[in-house]
Image (cartoon, rainbow, N blue to C red):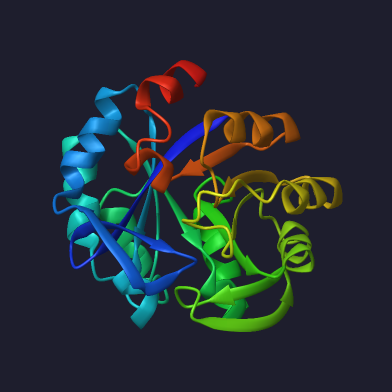
Length: 237
């Protein structure tokens, strides 16, 4: 299973939110590269990098941070936040993203999303299924939709998506454990490679999502709050 630490960016700084609330933003490090290098030194191979500024306005803002991390580490980076146009997707890949997490565009402009899926392939595009009360949310989780998360995933699986990152917004940043029931339901209803995100607070939580059959797990605040050590994660990976 992929162990994927997260770096969320606002104003070029490494932050974490609680339940996607921008007002809850807490700065953990003003230099995201320093954080990324610490992950790499700790034996980590993957990184989930999110441009929260970009997610909020609908256009990539912090691509320089992506480029800096991609240039100075060997981490395999999946990047999301604000990718809404062909220019955005070109910037993201040119800046060093290995994969892109796309959610809002899949809701609001499905034809564009599917054209990118065809152009870049399912190994490069991760469907970001961010949900609250099992309903998809978009634009940095600021807008709700009427789309059920499992129906949303099944629709895109039928059109070629193979990898999905699902975040339960109510769990994100709360350190209260993952949404195991939701992930189990997704895995039973589909054949996607599922990356679990939100709520991880201990290595036992990591074991839970692994036992469910998840492809990977995103871990954020638990690392920054010293609930899980990089040594533990490296040993588990």
